[in-house]
Length: 396
Image: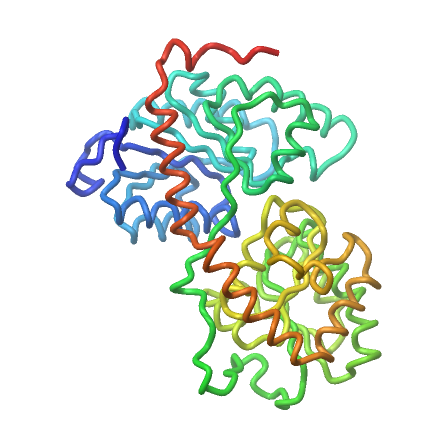
């Protein structure tokens, strides 16, 4: 990376000022995966990248393994009275690290980083999903009000979909926008060799070869909509009594989902190798209530598997042209979801066609290396802006 950012050849552990500091609160799930992928690309390109995040969890371990520094930041996922303390702690990290660019991921980190910096360092904010889309009433009003105010302290707001940008604009956020669709590692997520039979993970190794296997990968929480998938599953079983559904992931709703699941639903927990689940599946489903642009459908398509997703956030944008007819269902409509799932399970030739087309679509439009290159362009742009002009509030 060049043109405004320092790219020393030494290791990022040599004590030099990092070119970019990623600030992130979630240490698992899609946001953490995006950060890990970006750091991998940046370190591989010789850029000094570092991450400020909670010290425990998969993200910190992954970042250290990549050769980047981790700066512990004791932040919590849920909002609460400790937010001012979290802002002060992050301000201390920023003062010590003194990065050339700060990239804040997620609403929590975006709030804390922008308050701590207030425009003193070039700042990129990437919401991944707006908080006001997940709540209602006074909380949503306060979230929109903050985002309208906080936009003045972001040199660029990076959205993962056009839909996410439109949601921000509808909320009255006046920002300098850039849309960079999510990408996935197509070297890790790829189809099985054509001459190999489908390999079933141990959890479902007892399934007959003829039993359709549906997989849902995601944090077990209200956002991801597994409860709606369980409601839809009853209708699927009426048409395909031998079908099996596997929920891959963990989260706050795990116990309730287990209590309401029939015997044909199995729980894999948090799996380190989700690619094997995609390759084993006949169909991958993600019934989210809200998203920016979810990674699991992209990962599944990269593995050559067809997907069914709900029409939220960037879901429509993530699909190949023409796939919405078969693969997109209204949000919060279990019957429509069940119909789409069962129809595809009963049509093996169509699934094969959709899988091949989805794989090519991800290679051309959603490879993580394309996304990382676009993010690098944003860094160069914000690092090259004159400080006086950069700190000038947006006209409102």
